[in-house]
Image 1 (tube, rainbow, N blue to C red):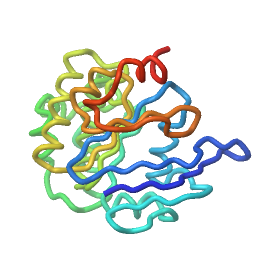
Image 2: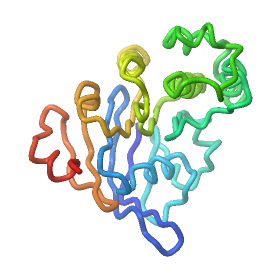
Image 3: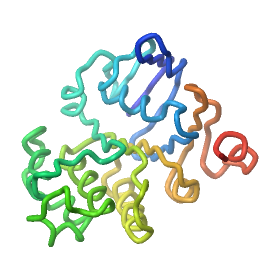
Length: 229
């Protein structure tokens, strides 16, 4: 579903990604890990078209989308939940969700995200800015799902969220993978969360992929070398 090859990305004269290769198949959850500042968010932003690629290729669902605009990628089926969630704080929960309906026009109701996150139902009239971090994260994921994506990218969805909400998000991601058969690319710092969910892992360091494989084969020494602070 997603095929990234030889991806180079720079901010001005400062290169951040160096020849990154990464693949995510339909129905597969891949966890992208690494210490802060190694380029994980840059990779997601480039995949979404928010940053230009200096070199390499981004392929999605059989098409070369390296030069496509973000809105064209969204309409093609890439859903993106950014770090910090970026909901509209002055719009209600319902209005935030309806923005996704207006943006892509592939869904006619709010049923799917509300079934996935029933805690949002009594909050539909509440402004997004007064929600807790966990409630905002559920809203951001629900909004992305309303675009009917084929690939869902999430940038640290558990960051700053209470444990009970993390469990709800984990359950939702299991359903997204099992029932909707989406490809999921997850940036995550909590190793146990990643191990429970992911089929494959990819570890980055200094802007490059340094390790990858099946999550069941992730070894403690690899964690110490590339992930431990």
